[in-house]
Image (cartoon, rainbow, N blue to C red; front, side):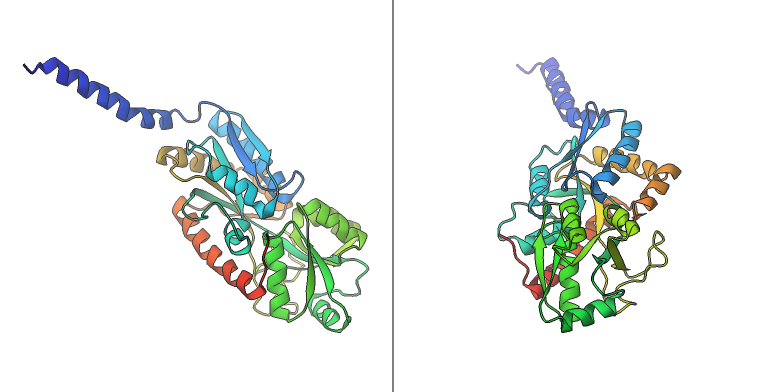
Length: 324
């Protein structure tokens, strides 16, 4: 015999179980949130993420812990975050190399589109083309001419094979029709050390990490890589206007969660980030680091990642750049 109270209890249990994920998402965050940075401490991405993390702590009401997992052109960190629970407690401060790596490495265990939930494109990074100060060149045109007539290839350093600093130099090399030898490092700091020491002659790097060396005169900045001049360095020309027309590269940093992150969690982190990015003190700090704030929507960021991955896949193919 059917008893109505059984149906009522069952319905109540189903409703409670169904509501659990939503309730958990609404309560987010209930514990510390981690942001994984795919570069060593001290670089532009690390500096920026720590500054943003402090504001997110204030907005979310929980500690925001920054963890550095460098190596393999940011693949190590990206692969790590892709495999974490999609609960919003582990996020990735992704870089341009997120979409570059699949075109560079023979085996990448994540899909930059399918394995992540975009939250927001935080900022574009001012990258500069720079040389050791002893190299007798002062602009892009002179650098290209020097490379064509020096008799042997110059060496250029990067923050790692497959990083944006690697592919941006490869794009310059291909467009200028010159040869350069790539020397990859695990991060910007050691790459800069060898540029300053003269062990390599050329580098594309974030202004944030290169600024002290540029200001001291041990490194000479020739141009910014973006299509337009940077507000941070208004007197420094672009690569395109100073010797290589058509050149453009916009490195970026943005927040991602593992695929399947609850919409309410994405909305909460997105809202907290947007609020943080309007903080005048943070804006000033970002500009000091050579960063232009963007802060778009999750949907806009998703579309951007798709287009950016296609662009750099073409560069990788044209350059023949590969990593084990």
